[in-house]
Amino acid sequence: MRSYLKTTAIALALTTAAGSAQADAHGGVEVLHWWTSGGEAAALNVLKEDLEGQGIGWTDMPVAGGGGEQAMTVLRARVTAGNAPTAVQGLGFDIIDWAKQGSLADLNAVAAAEGWDDVIPAALQQFAKVDGKWVSAPVNVHSTNWVWANKAVLEANGIAEPTSWEEFTAALEKLKAAGVTPIAHGGQAWQDATVFDGVAMSVLGPDGYKAAFIDLDEEVLGGGAMKEAFDRMAVIRDNVDENFSGRDWNLATAMVINGEAGFQMMGDWAKGEFLNAGKVPGQDFLCFRFPGTAEQVTFNADQFMMFDQGGSVSDEQAALATAILSPSFQSAFNVVKGSVPARTDVSDAAFDDCGKKGMADLAAAASSGNLFGSMAHGHANPASVKNAIYDVVTAHFNGEYDSETAVAELVDAVSIAK
Image 1 (cartoon, rainbow, N blue to C red):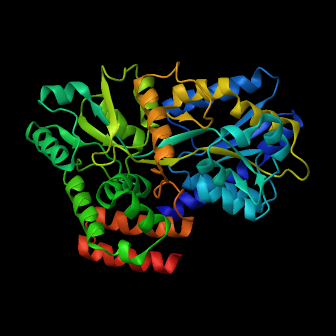
Image 2 (image 1 turned 90 degrees about the horizontal axis):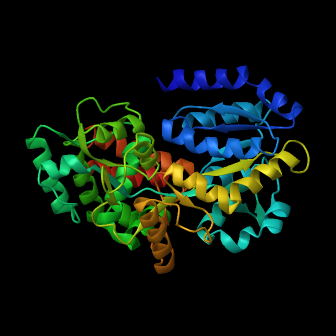
Image 3 (image 1 turned 90 degrees about the vertical axis):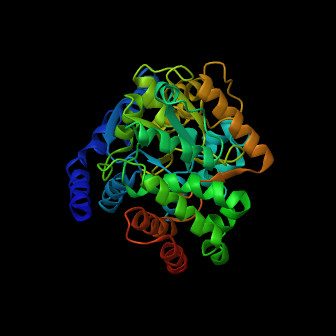
C-alpha cells in the first residue's frame, strides 16, 4: 500500500506540474498543503479570500493525508523536476531540512518590515529561521496533548472530566460497559504517535519527555517509565473499536461528534471539525489536556515555506507572508482552524472557550518552561528519528511487540536513526 501511495503521489506531482507555471503567469501563488478535511478547508479559505481581495490568484494543490507524508512525497518530486510550488505547508524539522538544502527563499526583508522577531515566540522561530534567515511564515500554534469528549455521552454515563490516569481508565470502563466505543482513533502511524505523545508526557513528566525525545537519552528511552507508557498505550488499544485501522483522524472525530465514541486524543485541529458541525464547546463537547499533562503543552506549528523561484522573493510570496502574519488573519484563521495564533500580541476576544484556554495554556507553558515541540509532529527531533519512533509505537499498538520488547526496540531504533 505504501508503494502504491508513493507512486500515486509522484504521478500527481508530475501531472500537476503545469500548476506552478500557471500561477506564475497570472501573478498568483500555487500552494501545496494537506488541509483537506471540512474544518481545515474552511480555515484555509480565510487565507484564499484575503489574497483574492488583493488581486492575487490562488492555485490550490491539496494532497490528502493528515500528517503531511504524502504532501512531502509530492513536494520532493516537484523540486527534483525543477518545478517547486510557490509556497508549501511545512512542519518543524522538515522546514529546516529544506532550508539547509538551499531550496527556500529569504524572507528577512518581509520579517524586518513586519517586526516578526518581536511577536513570534522563540520556540517557533527555531523552526522558521535557519542561519539567521527567515524561510517560512508561521500560521499558527497547535497543541497536541488534548482530549476531546462528547459531553452528552459522558453525562449519560455519569462521567466527570477525568484529571488522572485512574479516572480516565475508570471512564473507559464505564463507556465500554454501556456499549459505547470509549476511544475514537484512526490507526495511522502519526495518530498512534500523537496519542503516545500525551501518554509519554503524563508518565515521564517534562524533564523525562525532554530527555527521551529531544535529547534522545538512551537511559530514559529504555527506562521503566517508558515501559509504563507502553503499558498505558496497550490499555488505550483495548478501548478502540475493531475498525480503527487506516481511519482518517477527522472520521474518528466524527465518531465523537455523533455520539458513537466518548473520547478522542488528538491535536486541537480536531476542534475545527466540531465547529464545522455546528457544535459548541462546553455545551456539546469538552476539551481538556490529557490527564497528567495539565501544565505542559506539546506543540507543532503549521508554517508556509516559501520556495526559491530562481531569484528574490516575489511580490506574491511577500504578500502571502504578510497576509499570514497579519493580526487580523491570525485571529480569523485560528478561530476557524482550532489552533491559536503564532503571534503573541493577538487578542483572544474572538475565540471560543477552547480557544481561550489554548491561548492561556500556551502562554503559561512558555512562561514556565513547559512548552515542548511535539515528537509526533516533527518538532522534537529530525524526521529519521521521528519515523523510527513511529515504527516502534505502531508495531506495539498493533500487537507486534509487548511493552518490554517495545522499549528495547525503541532504544535500538533511535540509536540507529540519530
